Image 1 (spheres, rainbow, N blue to C red):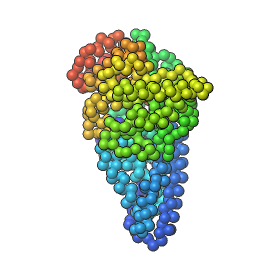
Image 2: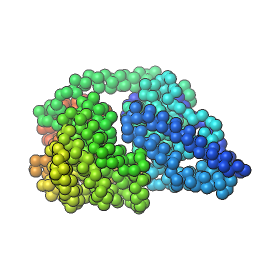
Image 3: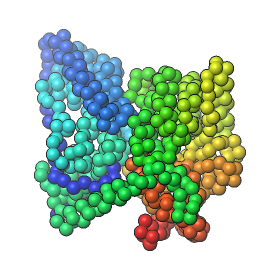
Image 4: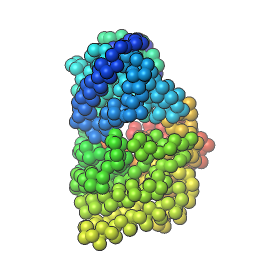
Length: 573
């Protein structure tokens, strides 16, 4: 028996035989051609075949994983028609009289090398998208059948060098019990899809594809990022018992779906879901969510050739509000920049995109985009309980400017005879300066949502997508906890509520601390809603409050984490 350590990309335990997903190795030889027109025609037919396949994969992905995941393949389809990619390939075929598959290799390698050398993990993952599309076209040119994971018919754990987005979208969760890859990170498209489909995944193992053979028995621990190869019967029994226990616990919590989230000492809390589309809104309802705490609207803008119209946006917002049937929905205005791009806008490249033109900064700079989104949201407000929040607010003037545009568009719509509901206007707290000046914001803002993922990276000056500084991504760092406590206290003083919509809200070790701090709302992935609600119901806010000063005065994240682990262990939470 042996084990491999990787990166836990999707939680859960899987126990099954290994299935090595090997892609056909494409041997691309350089050849000179005599009939240019014939080669161009072959190239265009290969693009057509690839487009047909990608459309089928997109539709399958939409049905299995939702609209935002299908958008990944809309982006792949855009690559197939991108003149900056297709044009140079045709030029190379014509001017150098090269065979199409080699011309593709030459052109796409330039993009792949550039992206692969990026310090930004998100950009490195995008190299896989271009490689995936190029490989698909080349396979058709060479007459090689593309691997289709959807054809797997028995329970297996996929072992592969790199699960491409196309592969990930074709996974059948009924038989694919887990995924292990040599490369990849938590932000890769394949990891994202696996998580949304509740398929446990461990990525970045470096050697799993070489070390694991077809038919090897494998245990995948998606909590710790471990992969056990041909484990002992005792270890199999131990993990199987853990897996069954986890499933049983979730099943036994189903009764909480229609109950309130009340702590052991009678304090009310709210547990809501994070979504990117209408399908995920339905998941939140099924899992007992008390509303939507974060609707990431950027997914409506991604994977397309142009901005969505006001009407398109209105229909999406209306559908989510109607699905929630009166429960509150918090919609974040467009948050692009950093690791999220809209290629069709052709924005200039930035040296430090996470510190640049993103969030509300972008929207205030491109006011027509924000105004169109605000109009769509205000129109939809008549169909449910809507709250709107602005992302990446650094100074009070940004919130005031956004609010002024909101009021202008609202008044215009009322004058046009449009029915408008009551709308709360809030903001994200993601920047240390905002948290430090929260008293000023609290006098003007209706509610707050703390984005702990960004707050951590900005406070500790550590890119959360950079593996080399991942040790600095510390949710329990005293500075982070003090900022969170400061925001909660200042907001409550003005009678305003505070939510957390970052990963910390669903962290079982952190939940007791957040309960003690007085956090009002926990906004988590739909699959974590029931567990979070059950967790809170076991806690006593008053008991934890007595520990707060001692916890917040501990010198580092390690000691605070240890103290929280011990607290949970003593109470068997």
